Every structure is written in structure tokens, then in C-alpha cells.
Length: 74
Image (cartoon, rainbow, N blue to C red; front, side):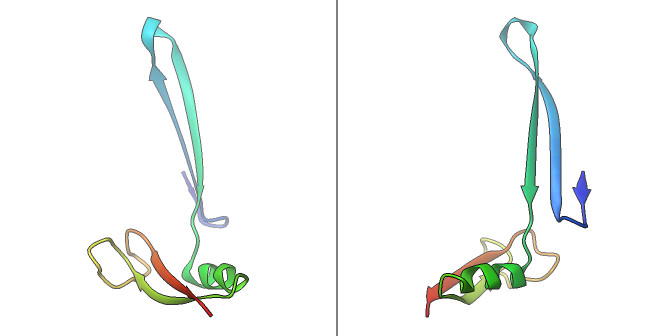
């Protein structure tokens, strides 16, 4: 499930382990926007030098699969 108001994704799944027991697993991830990253990095005197939208070096866009940030100290 994705909650657009908090930019969080919640995942739940069940796995069976040895002996047939079932265990439920849960994960919650928070997604950050580029302006949020700039703000967080700025608190530590870092500035964004470059951004990428994928490990293949493509430019970052809102629909990129990931946000890769290269930052440097001011």
C-alpha cells in the first residue's frame, strides 16, 4: 500500500518456515523528494552536486525508478 499523504509504502507478507510455521513480515518505507533531500543535506553543510534517476546515469525525473544524489561539502 502507498500513502501519498505521508509518502510511505507499507508491505506485509507471510512466509512458511521449517516445520510448516507461518510468520508475518512487515516493512514500512518512507520516500523523500529532491527538495527534502536538499534541505536535509543543507543542515550538514552539504549541497547537491548531481542527481541521477538510475544506476545507468540517466537524468532524474519525477517518474524515475530511484533518486541518486551526489553531494559535496560547502
